[in-house]
Image 1 (cartoon, rainbow, N blue to C red):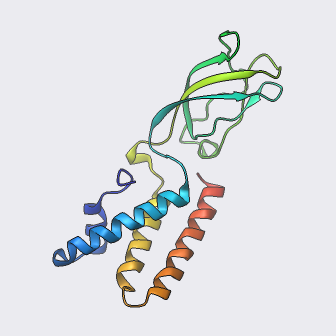
Image 2 (image 1 turned 135 degrees about the horizontal axis):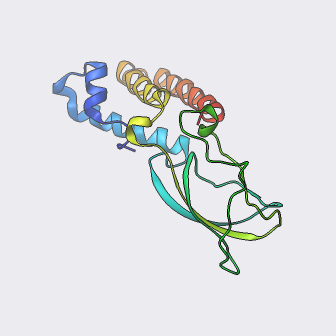
Length: 170
């Protein structure tokens, strides 16, 4: 999860004291792990292959945003399939790119397919709200080290915000 945001960036944003760096790094690591488990998916640029069943030619890859479909084949025959022209890959600049997208193959029939695709964001493209949530959780943990109940409640508040973000944006 440290690929999403580096400690040095958080250190600068929160003006952290260098004498507490070891503690702050531990808090940062736990914050990233907490956020990663909550998001429950890899959002960094990667490639994967999935096998799935279509529903009358419709399918939806597990990971998103889909940047490029590298290979699309019938899982049983090995026949190369093509996407319907009406279901292009949405560019990242468009809002619809940040949700799970359904694609349609030209042959509208139920079948097992194997699809290899690139998905995710470059580090620079990570939505600012995720970074903001990481910084806010880290800040709350640092300011409420003495009061663990307050820290837990504040973290829950930011994770609920991430839940809204996940439903509406990512």
